[in-house]
Length: 126
Length: 111
Image 1: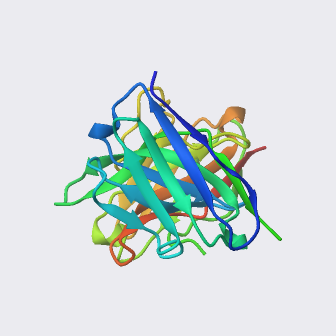
Image 2 (image 1 turned 90 degrees about the horizontal axis):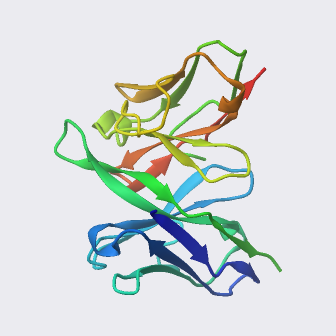
């Protein structure tokens, strides 16, 4: 079965750092982009970052650009999110998700997320 | 504040038909980007419900239907069941933000 398992969350003070990891099972990361999505307490979902199948192209939400770094090791079947200079509003459950490209009637695609990890809690407070 | 706008709550009685709306703008849904929907039962991980505006993944009952028109999309649930009580999120892409965007979610209560 295909599965994503996150690890590495925890509680940190503002300004601190964390590394979130996501292990993929049942499929090869070489063939897929990967994405991180987060959900603040009682709030909606927020796209955070994406990395392409070759682990070359990386994209970030404005709210995290410059502080978060996404990486992928296709051979180790893992995706990571390095989070620096944490802020209180980074408190959320972080999900590792697998995006699939949907090509509609236009010449472009949108990603949809067909496989989700169980989520990992990050709590930032002083 | 979410880029896509969804009503925060909606309710319906068992057996009823309900429509959940998702409103965007010219930089996302209105630009032609497709819409996807997720269901999140409290305490669980979001689950893909509809992709590409109207496609259902394997295992999703045909009680769930998706539509898109202009700058908005909708999710229709017919024959509402108690197990449908959940949060529902729409999602698309925004070319001014160069990234994925979600709605704030609609909490559906089955009376």
